Image (cartoon, rainbow, N blue to C red):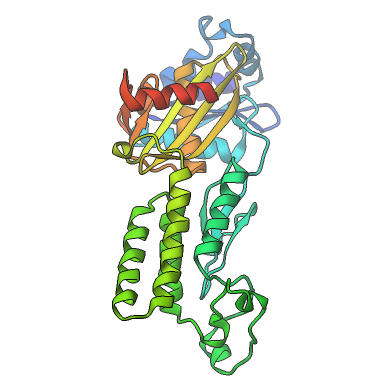
Length: 352
C-alpha cells in the first residue's frame, strides 16, 4: 500500500456512503457501499479479506480511493447501483443476458400508435416490457390490432391538418383496421379511450376493460344500434379468449414479483416472474458472473434491484427463497412455505 492510499483510508469518515477504487491509470475498477466507510474500506487490506484470488488482484490494483457520504444505507444502496451501471467497473458483478428484448411502445403523439420496438427513445412515449418471450408480445399486439382500430401511419395529425383535408384514407381504413382519425372520422377522445384500455390490457388488468365494453354493448343494444353492439360483442369475445389462454396462477394473488436464485461456483442464475392480477405476464432469467466470491444474498439483492428497474416491476410484495438483509427495510418480502406463492417460487427455480 502506498503512503498516498494509506492517508486516504485514514481520512475516511465512519459514515454510510459509497466508495470508488481507482487503478494507477485513473480507471474506476470497483464501486461498493458501506454503513461505515472507514471500517469497510480498511477491511479490504486485512488477510481475511484477501482469501479470494480475485479480491487479492483487486486490492493489488487499487491506487486511490474516493467516497461519497449519504444519509443512510438505503441511499448508499441506490447510489451504488446507479454508479455501477454508469461506470461498469471491471470487478463489479453485472447481469448478463446478451439480448436486447423488444418493448411495446405507445407513442407520445396525438392519436398514439402502438407498436413493438427494440429502441427506447426518451421522447415522452410509454414503453411496456421488455418482453423476453417475443411470441407472447406478438400475440398481445395481434389482440390489440383485432380489437382496436388504431392508425399505423406516421402523419402529423394536428387539428389544422385534419380540418384542411391534407390526408386521404389508406388501405387500413378500407379493410376495417383503422377508423380514419386522419380525416376526422374518429374523435381524439374516442381514440384515447381505446388507448387507455390498451394500457390496462398490456398490464394484465383485463377485467376493467371488459366491464367498460359490456356497458357499451348494452347501451348500443338498448338504443337499437345492433351493428355497434355486435362489433363490441366480438371485441369482448376476442379479449375473453385471450384471457382464458393466459397463465393464471390464482386470481387471489393479484400483483407479485417473484425471484429465485440458482447459485453455482463461478456464476449464479436469477429467475424473475411478474404476476399481474394472478396471471404470469412476464418471465426472465439472467446470468450473473461472480467477481469477488459474492454470496447468494448479495447476488439476489443486486438482481432484485436491477431486474425490477429493467422490467418495470412495481409489485408491493416480493416473493423470495430468503430475505436479503440489505433490502429488508426497503421492500415487503414473503418467504412462502406452501400454497400458490410457494408454487410460483418453485416455478421460478425451475426457470433459473
